[in-house]
Length: 537
Image 1 (spheres, rainbow, N blue to C red):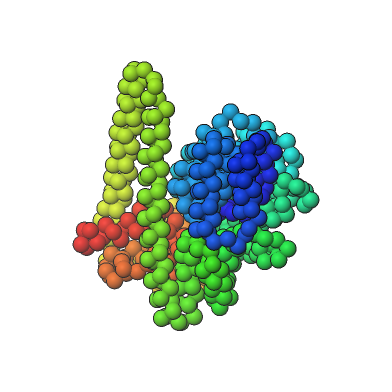
Image 2 (image 1 turned 90 degrees about the vertical axis):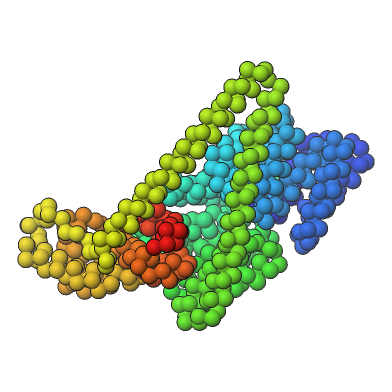
């Protein structure tokens, strides 16, 4: 999350763009400049000062003061995860900046921040609309370094768009990697001696994009060959920048990179290192309250302590994680609902002066949209329920986890695999499926082929032709089928957290487990558990 610390750049941009004339305006301008130069000010004190200066500017109809104080507040709220407040301020500033030329890039920045907040609330279409508007304004910017900064920020924010939709469309992974690399490329072209863009701004852009690349490869480490090593390369590059004392970088991003490195070492099974970095993140978070980063630290600490056998510490952090996670989720849902209501209201207000015919049309379209949304919601719910009932029906006829059925088709290449070898491997796979060996986290096709006294090529071909799966989907099907039976037959499993269920069935991360469960069953683990409890099965 981008935030804070760039106030001086925006201040000078505004200062050049708008003329000052009165002593009162000059006093406001000087106070804003002082705030931009002070990095250790209490956040509540800063918010109060900026709100006061914004109100004074509005009373004087002083556009410069309104835009600077409002923009500073947007940065402050964005850094605290207060996305609803960011959007509210952004809408106000758009009106103030209307019809202004954006030669210094400040209007582009306003739209960009608004896009980030909308994106974090899950309003992807509205976010993309503001992001495109921000890019349009970049064309008006004259300063070379400022233009590269804004382009770098645009690509970084596009990465957020792809990140939000990556589970819906797996092909977006390549686009995500491209946009973060482009962001780094643009940022590196910013002149280190630029008067408009400081080194702090430049290297925070670079460090943040390295971190995002590392997070992507870490998340996809099971699907991308060498993904963990690539993730480590990018995360350590980012960490190096955020630990470099030459730069004064946003604490929020420092906390975030510490958490991601903690995640990295957790995946590498270096649990003490994971704990060390998560504790460092928590210590820094105590100074700059960031609940969304704190909840990550709790999760990594709970998991790592559990792996080290320190169950009491793990239980403590898992409890803290669950409470805070639920609180954040509730807040985000509330903010998103209020934002959507406000957006609909604004559309209505914009047309109040239109003819009655236009109002009727708008009302009719709103009604159609509501009805359509209702039917889509109901259709999706029916689909989820149908998928759930299909699972239950299968479970009623499967008292124990069913093996992956052998296909009757005979596509095996007899030039390389004899029928005797095929039969032997199929028998060994049946033993493997009954042994629950598929629950190991470190399971891969090379390891299994050694255990079955064959080679990976033969094993892959037989699984593909006789089990109708790739090795990855074969392994996932066994794991998910196992945990579905546990949830259905043993109620105690339904009280476990998703992260713990992932551990039980051999996944190294809850995210990968979540995606696999939904892909195979057509419902999420949470929906399945909730439905089981509601049906009192």
